[in-house]
Structure formats: structure tokens, C-alpha cells
Image 1: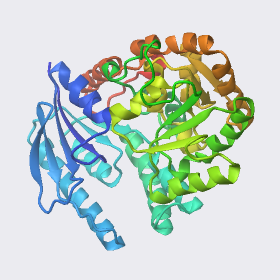
Image 2: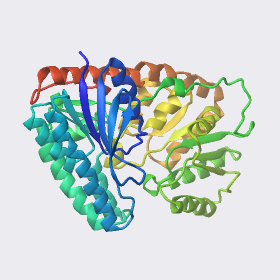
Image 3: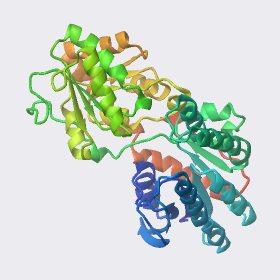
Amino acid sequence: MALRILMISSDYYPVTRVDVTVLFGVEIAGYGHRIDLILPSEAACPRPYLAPWAGGEIWVGATDLGTSLAHRIRKHLRSIAADLRLFGALRSGRYDLLIIKDKFLSGILGLLAARWYRRPFVYWLSYPFPEAYLQRARDGTSRYPRLYLIRGHVFRLLLYRVLLPRADHVFVQSAEMLRSVAAQGIAVRKMTAAPMGIQPQMFAARDPTLPRAVLPPTVPCIVYLGTLGRGRHMDFLLRVMVQVRASVPTARLYLVGRGDDAGDEEFLQDEARRLGLSLGEALVMTGQLPRAAALEYVAEADVCVSPLYPTPVLNVGSPTKLIEYLAMGKAVVANDHPEQRLLIEASGAGYCVPYEERAFAAGIVKLIAEPERARQMGLKGRPYVLAHRTYAVIGREVEAELRRIVAQGPAAKSAGSVAGRS
């Protein structure tokens, strides 16, 4: 039986996150299910409208792109106004269940509507937003610290005391997030860990006999793909490179990506100069590149790196970059983070080391010094990803869980863990 799913998400239209476009738009929809979404517009949009999407429709809500506090409040109010359409949608009887993804105030509306019209209520938590808001308020990285502090406390209360306890099922991002949420009193039996994955055809392994096209042919190249935001503490990698170059003087670090604002990249450049890492020789910052061009750097790298600053917010994440590295057959050095440890130990495709400069540098140097060992380790990554971390695999298990939720009806108990079986 095909399901009819209504989903409300914190994403914007046009939606770009793969855990929506691929997991739901390709894999779940591929089973014949209809998925309709309610999303705010990313571009300036004075009036709402309907847009086709993956065999269903997206109700695109109006938005306000102003940057002042008043404009930001108006933007949130417009988003809530668009989400109010869920009452009419559920009243129509067209939908079998409601999924709320990463929304809190609208999550309350969704919970009320689902209970009133007797439809299963599913909450999808992809990121610990309340904890992240509180952290940004406390470390001074938010533009409006008091607003973030209030938002963090209110959303934390709504999430752990109202939404998750009353949800019929909860999807979380990782096994570690499942443990973290369970520590807040949410029953493990009604949670499923659905980690990030990939479409394998987008990440082909490179023939090692081919000459390099974007990286210099005789230089040991270390590649990082991802954000350079200050909250990620990427200056850690610069200090690691100082130690790497003490053993391998010609080694070069490529940072492929950009910061959250211009000051992030300027900070890294200033820090590199302070550490004596010459720009263009020891360090290359490519800026933001199209996906295909960025992956060329990964494909030609000697070593790929995935440092994740150890905080409670990041520890529960499911880092996509590491899965992409493995899918492309690259040997990896990653720090001891719950999800990264699982992936490295299960695949054998690299080294998982403490978040410490000396240990991280030692892992990189070892892979550079033993290229055949690095190649053999890299070869182990793709088979593991194909077996456990493609969206086809994840989608199959999520789809089965959604069927169980609908079959059991609202206020039922269900179980399962995609990550636990990976």
C-alpha cells in the first residue's frame, strides 16, 4: 500500500539537503509513496504558491529576507503561518502520517493537528538545535546572544518535554544522538537512528594510474572538504600541518570549502602566516567550488582528513564528508568521534586518532610514508559504504519503519535502528 506523507521541515525551497531530496524525494518516493511538503521560500517571496516535487507537491511559504531583528521575527511568523496549512491538510483525510523535521513551535501545531485528526506524529531530529543555540549564545558566535539563549532554552523544553515524549516515533541522526536523546528520558524503543548517506554513483573511486589534473603530481597532498566556519576550529589542522611538515617538508594542505563569513577564511590565513605556513605552498584555500570540481581534489588526494571539534553538539552528528571520502576509496585520518570511530573501525579505511595535534599528524605522516598501505586501506572504504551507507540502504529501512508506524496507528510503540544494524 502506498503511503501519503505530509512533511514539514526547517529546510527552504528549493530544498537541497540530501536527507530530504534523496532519502525522501528519490528513495522513499521510489516505493510509490506520495510525499507533500510545506517549506518557506529561500528567495524573496511575498505570496505562497505550489510547486511540483518528486511526485508530490511543495507548498512554498512567503518569506522575509530582511536582516534586522524585526525582519527576522516576521520571517519566523510567516513560516509558522505557512505551517498552519497542516490543519486543513490533515482534516482532508489525504494523509496517513505527519513528519515534522527540526521544527519546534510548528512541531507543537503538528502534534495538536495529528492528535485531533488521529494521524501518527513522527518527529525527525537531524541536529541538536537547542543545544547549538545555547552554545552559540554562550561562546559569543551568535548575532543576537540573548535571543539565542531564550530560543535555546524554550526549544529544549519543547523538544524534550513535549514533542519527543508524545511523538509516535522519533528519527535521529546517529546512534550517539539516540543515546543522547534517550538520556533525556525518551524511550529507546520508539527511536530510529537514520544516519547520513550518499548516492554511490556521485562518488566514484579514481583510477590511481591516471595522472593528477588538479593537484601537483609530486607533492604529498592532504585534503579537507567542508566548512571552514570558526565553530569548526579549523586552525587545529594548521597546527597539525606544522608537525606534518617537520617530517614531510613538501606536504601541502588543501582546504576545499568556505567559512560562514569572510572573516573565517581571513582568520585561517592570518593564523597560517603566524605559524609559518606559506600560502600557496604549505596551504591552499580553494574557496567554494562546484561539487564535481571539489571532489576532484578528494579523488587525487594522498590523504583525506576529517577533524571534528569535540563538543556535545558535534559529537552526535553524522559527518557526510567521511562517508564521501570512503566511497571514493581514500585513506582517512579522523579524530575519535562516535560516528567516525564506528565508520573507521568497521571499514578499516584509515586511522581514528585522539583530537590531538601530534596524534593527528602522526596518522597523516604514516599514510604518506606508506602509500601502498594507504591505497589498500582506501580500497576497504567503498565496499563498506555500498553495504551500509547508501541512501538506497537507509531508505529501505526508513520506509519499512514508516509502514510499521502507519500500520500501528497513532500513539503506538515501534522500534528499530538503522545505524544499529549498519
